[in-house]
Length: 507
Image (cartoon, rainbow, N blue to C red):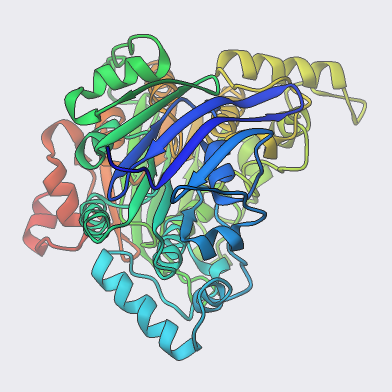
């Protein structure tokens, strides 16, 4: 048998009463792409942190290249040849891309700048090396993390949801890159909730459930349905059918909007128009960095239009172009941002206090003071309804896995019973079982008459959920395309600007 590059024997890790990993056995072979499968909270991220030196195991043995390994830090792991791209980014926002890269990759700024540009071109991960990180979208930050890790020439590359914010064209290019890395001797640990991706690229998979290993399989010999059942321990429910509704009232209307942000690195928006009616889901597709963040800020009220641009954004029939976020929420608007930690939740605050950020109008205050009992009851109900895996409502938001925090934030906003719900990246980093539950809930709300706007970079998700799809490219929106009459290839052409003016007019 081939000697494993990495072996774990009986590795366990607990955080108080939470047993994140329990007696984990794992072998990663040389020149392999090895998947780690499991629901949110199954222990995947904790296990990767143990391998990368972010955390140390309570018990068990880690063996690297046939020698026992004890890592005190990620820097030591990188020196050993272990690199990792985290699901939650580890970038300094006030530094440029190349300055962040210099923190872990030796080299002069000029040379690294050119290497970053070349890797971006080769792998479909284009990003401006001289841009400050705080000006980048979530998808662009993911690209920076992947490039920075590849520049360290690792023997073992750990990727935590690397494709979650990449368009389909870039995913295949990334897979080609990963296969080339494997063929050159690099082993890859691959975490993804996209089971078809795992079947396409991985030659081995370890399944975790409740912090324990429940099986090792070759994912190429099982279909996605089998893998999902092994992962969550039950069959997946069928998608909820969308009920035909027509002629609903306009809940969101944008009319010929032009917007040039003050930030010179932001994407200007040009002549945007869209309409979302009650009983309808409109999806916005597009490659990350084409104006999604700017559009989201304008709709949510985080950015306010200048006076000369009034009468461009309407909610529930009211001009809201100059209204702030709180005023828009009072009209029946709710928002789930793509950035969970920082904009969707305050990581240092409890889930109960995070509920108060947007749900306080639901009788959670009394005489201007917080009614702790009602706030906790609201949070308990959100945890129960949306299957948030957490010990309780007083746990800090930052201690939850990414997927469980997403379920909490989505649940909190839906429980406000809004007339208009806007969600950016609804199932980013969420396991297949939770993603299915969220999508079923959104379709159910649409059937009940809610107006829903979704920004997503997952075409499969948009085709499953949406009545209409528009594509954002270089700050401009395509016409609204009827989903049932549209092919993924058509959306892809709009995403890269490969359509003619005649086709635009016909659409």
